[in-house]
Amino acid sequence: MLHKLDNDDIADIAVNAVTKMVEYGLVPNCTDTDDNTEFDIQDIIRKSIAKILAERNPHLINLDDSDIQGLLE
Image (cartoon, rainbow, N blue to C red):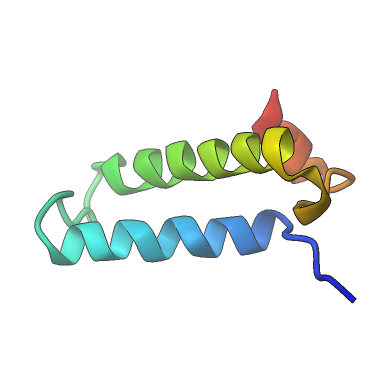
């Protein structure tokens, strides 16, 4: 049975992407600072992934997940 991606799955993808961006120096490391750049970028990635999946491959995403619905608004 196919596992539909939920908010946690998409968040994991976003966190991994931003972690790599920090490692490559593309995004500042905001750990222990008041800078929210990392979190802002993670949110942008999460929303983008959710919207693309919902539009192009809705069978791959759990559209019943309230957190996913929030990303699509």
